[in-house]
Length: 211
Ligand code: BEZ
Image 1 (cartoon, rainbow, N blue to C red):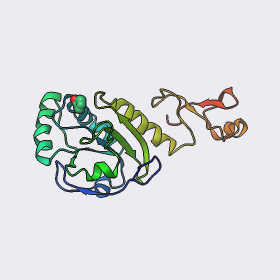
Image 2 (cartoon, rainbow, N blue to C red; image 1 turned 60 degrees about the horizontal axis):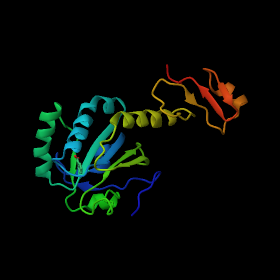
Image 3 (cartoon, rainbow, N blue to C red; image 1 turned 90 degrees about the vertical axis):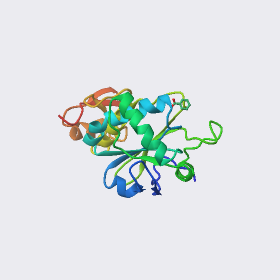
Image 4 (tube, rainbow, N blue to C red; image 1 turned 45 degrees about the horizontal axis):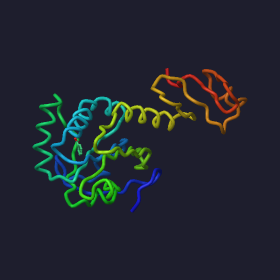
């Protein structure tokens, strides 16, 4: 099965560092982040999972539940978590799925055979509360992800779901946003009470809609 942006994320049950998990039950009505890493006891992954734990309050603020995955066993996850907590000075509370039979990795296309036939690539999905896949990114094993970017995309997606806007390059929460091309400038002047800044007929900005 090939997973694409806009698809409904398939449900699964799996063993994890915190016990058996039903993915949909775990997510409830929250946004979700499902991310794979190549292996336990590896340096880049150690920093990534540590950072994810440190950002727990940022994910909570965005009503987002995080869950990690690799093809290692529950016992490895549980022992590695002790190392992550010690070396990254944090406390990992989110679950790490033990996908040692590769079932979920294959379901979610986390195995890229030309990169590695036996371990997962560094993929990350953002799911909205309807379990629709809204972001897919895949990094090579040698490059750790930027979790500030993940928070930034969550901010953008959550804003776009509330207001008829898009967000420009390098946008951060609080910056001006873009008025979609489907809205005429005349209509935009009614729809965006904070004002319309027209650079070109197709490039219009309005201040961030939330004070
Ligand atoms: C790491 O997480 O450090 C890593 C994993 C696989 C290959 C290279 C680095």
